[in-house]
Amino acid sequence: MEEAKRSDSDAIGPAGSARRALSRADGWAHVAMLLVVCLLHFFLYQGRFDFIETEGLRAIVPYEMLERGGPSMPTVHHRPYVNKPPLYAWTTTLLAQALGRFDEQVARLPSSISATLLVLLLYAVGRRWGGGVTGLAAAALALTNLTVLDYGFRAELDMPFTFLLTAAFLLLWPALKGRGASAMACWIGAYALATAAAMWKAPHSLIFMGLGLLTYARVKRRWRWMIHPGNLIGAALSLVVLGAWLMKVLGYAGGKRVGTAAGSEVVNRLAPSVGDLLSIPLFPLILGVVTLPASVFLVASFWEGGAVRVEAAGTAWRRARSKLVAWWTWAARDPFAEFLLLMLLPNLVFLAIAPAKSARYALPMFPLLLLLCGWMAGGGATGGRGDRASAEGLPLERGVCGVFSALKWIGLATCGAALLIGVAPAAWMAKAPLGPAWAWWALGLGGLLASAVGRGSATRAIRGADAAHANGRANSVGAAFLLLSVGCAPIISEVWWPARVRSDSQRAAAARIDAIVPDGEPVFVLGRQEFPDTAFYSNRSFHWIESPAQVRPTTSSPAPFFVMRETELVGDKPGMPNYVEARGFRELLRFDRIDRDVILFNLDVEAP
Image (tube, rainbow, N blue to C red):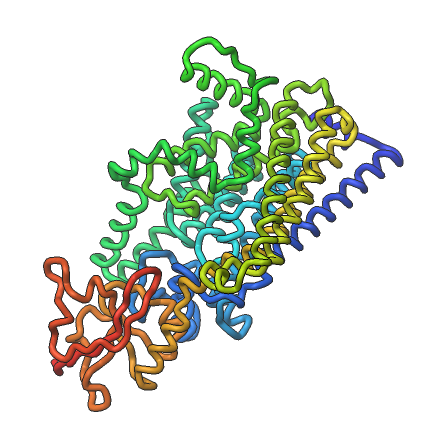
């Protein structure tokens, strides 16, 4: 692969110039295609949908900062909020001030911008590593992954965290291989990005990076990086920043509050229970599903034949182990591929053990996996050769054919489903809303076009017809996945998001609260801080308090308004008060927030 790159770079004369110009043109065409698809997925409908799940929690923090005039210490319901770092809130607050407004679109901009930058980063790194083939395939696989498309749109912490951590991982490669000032800059840059990720979501970004580095050192038997000045300075600066923030939070919210929040976070996110350990065997299956379709290319690379052929002798466990070792040896012939694998493996083991098995917790590992799969899909492990003589590439090419054969049947099935949806009775649609029929037709058409483009290119590669046109073949594979991604867009915007908004939106509940609570009267939150999206859509001011005794009665409001989860209202745990039996309790409104019943009520309170 490197020899092929050198021969291209050494080409002189009109032919070499034309080849370089064509490569540059392909690169700009790829970037334009990727930007169009990113615009379609991440930016087009940002302000159309209400907040869902914990988006309101992320939004209420900068919302209250804006009420105070700009970036400041984070609060929720005007109480110190120390469960998450402040970088998202500060960034969003500055964006809102620059744009002169704050709404769903502004709250989602950091995720959308980060998702777009991640796609372009995958393309740039993949192109530099394995050519336009690898870059386009990795970026296109990202734009077909539903987890990426989902969290690249939401006002959540996960996508910016993923982008920052990915950039940190990728800087470790030149840091480990380089020398002098360049290596120093890469080390400090990697730690700066990992620290930014820690200040955006949580300090486990440094755990991810440390596990990868230690595994790399153990496998390669190279430990000198541990005493590299860049590593020491970067780590020290990172600890200084995180330590300074911790001291600031201790003074702001109090040691007990911070210690409780930090301890709860460690237990919930890092300390496994017996059930978590028993579910470890399910993690590979979960990861394979949430990383579709990239995981299909990974499985396809295990196909029988070529470099990964394993003899049938021995037990099933020994055959599986032999195949895994053979596959690793085959993939790790490329030093950068081996580096990506060594960054991935320990962190996937860590995620399998830790309780956090949701798709979004594994999202930071997706980009490394997407780069590997893009490299494999583009024939990177065989130097990009698609000819019949390249026996090692045949299993993967056949696997690619299988992927696009499946896409063909998926496309036909979705077209058939769209036809049924289009003629379905209105009464049935009201009970099971599946969105407009045209959205399903778009998905079916995208699947059919993807299968036609992708399968045709893969089939020609197996027959050896495209031996001299590897770039064109891989461009077709990338274009096929981009077509599929475009086909997914209407389903996401017309079916998935509207369904989630119907389930999770608090706009209607906030309007009902505004109709009950007089203008100018506050709403006091008891129990957990769990109504940020309700507060965001309400015109009333929400304030968290520990006890109704903290409220001073007034002549205009002798019975203040409180809101609380029903499960906490009755005091079903030792030491919890039973507000239902308190003097003056009067239920005013019952509404649902993320499958939990919430009660708005009055209580009579006495002056202290």
